[in-house]
Image (cartoon, rainbow, N blue to C red; front, side, top):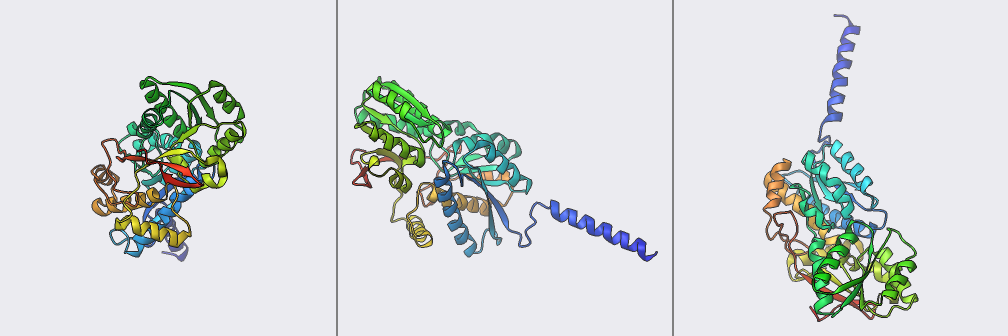
Length: 376
């Protein structure tokens, strides 16, 4: 056998080896367990996406510091959904092509709804730490969220407007995306079921910088108050322009308002706004207390909206994989049975739809700071 022929054989073997390594689902030399994260790191929902990313990275350091999961380190691969459903789908496909079947995301409901059919078909687990649209409840067995549904929050908000604020005529101004539309439609239905009227129902686009046309219509309808679900940047624009155009009545919002960026951008225009949030976790709980302390130490700021839920999302995967191994169907079954998981955002229990079960409370902006309303 001549040397030239031997060289050809060696090259063929090496080429095959390289091809196998490229196609191997877990190419990491340390045998890490890979988790994908599809988050809005740019665009309107970026404040929440970045909060979730910080929470995930904090959990990652803690889990790997304790030896990882099943003696393997976790590795999180982040992709930017850009607050765009098409980008979210592209990110999901990219991660799945790398053999990653455990995904945290999206924060944006539109992104989750766009990814869900693919995830369900391919048996990719999706765990959203921020999406709230009611349609997600029926998106499939592989779709979970450690975040409440708008069907619950919108109902709670409408009940509050009726029973506590005593509105008879309400106006609604919402971001025209799955998140805002879900809250707005639920609020409208429940408020009208109480025998009350929604006299103005206006939407604004993502990244909107001028809402004077919608606000003018709302003012002319003369409602008792305004329901304003949205994201920090656009809600801040709405608040400033409402004030400029003479609005002097109550404003009710949802959990998207519970982020320091709103007060920073809106300033005095946010004064008096009431908003719903899931009931605060027990600060004496060691998981809650350690998370809050470590977050402040790591990032030099208080946790924002989706910080704790992002942190918990990775911990939920770590727990389920630790219990069931890396088979997606076994992990799915473990997550479906999750009850009272000790989370930084409070205990996590999934219902039959993979939705989080959680009570609500209300806060108000008073003297530039968030405070309890004492009306819950």
